[in-house]
Structures are given as C-alpha cells and as structure tokens.
Length: 152
Image 1 (cartoon, rainbow, N blue to C red):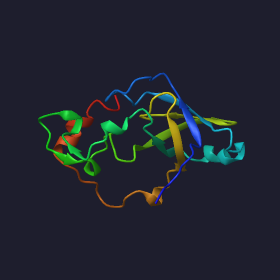
Image 2 (image 1 turned 60 degrees about the horizontal axis):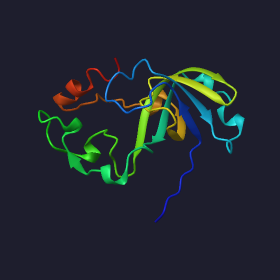
Image 3 (image 1 turned 45 degrees about the vertical axis):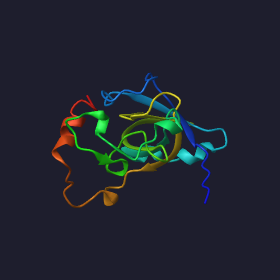
C-alpha cells in the first residue's frame, strides 16, 4: 500500500536547526499551501489550541531507528521508537498541541510548535476538550527528566 500526502501548509519561524529543548516560546507562522483555499482556516480563531501534524523532512532515511535510548542518554532505558516521541521515526511524522495566537488570511500564528522553519504541515486540527483523555496520564519517571527543559 502506498500513501501519498501533500502538505497543506508550511511553517515559518526563527528555528533553523533541530534542538531538543526550549520550544515553549517559539512563535511560528503557518501559511497555507497554494493549492489549499483560504477558507480552510475559516473560524479557526474560535479555538484556543490546535494539533499540528507535520513531516520531519530533514530526517534522512538512514537516521530512522526502531529502538534506542531516548536522546541517546545512557541513564534512560532502551525503548521502541513507538514508545518515544523521537523524530527518527519510520514515517517521520510529528504531532504537537499548540496555542493559537492569531489568524490572518492564509496564515495562523501559533506558540509552542516544535518544528523548524520550512517544515511541511500535513494537517491541522482544533483541540476539542472531549477528545482529551478523561483518565490520568501515566508515564515512566525518566520522561519528566527528559522533558524538563523542552518547553522552557
């Protein structure tokens, strides 16, 4: 089976290199691709948060892994790639919940997107409270250590 996706938008921000931390204050403009009509963003400003699905286009096929230590840190356990949020994934797809700052024409401005400048956006969805988990989220202790500077 072949799945072909065409980006619906592109990111524009000051981050040009992949780094592991300090994404929380990053402000990103997301501009619709030429083939997507402007009305695709109609009423998006009614939502406070969006889910951005994007493509790690700078990850080479040779970088994809299926198992390893998060960030290569020997203090963390070996985990399958599907038990991590690492960029070196088989389908190179990223997902991030962001704050919607503004909408003007073919561009939305968001805060907290962990994607570098020029990243292709595959889809954008509004966050619905009803889609959020009703149960407590659990995770291994090392995740909090790994994430302590991610959004700062």
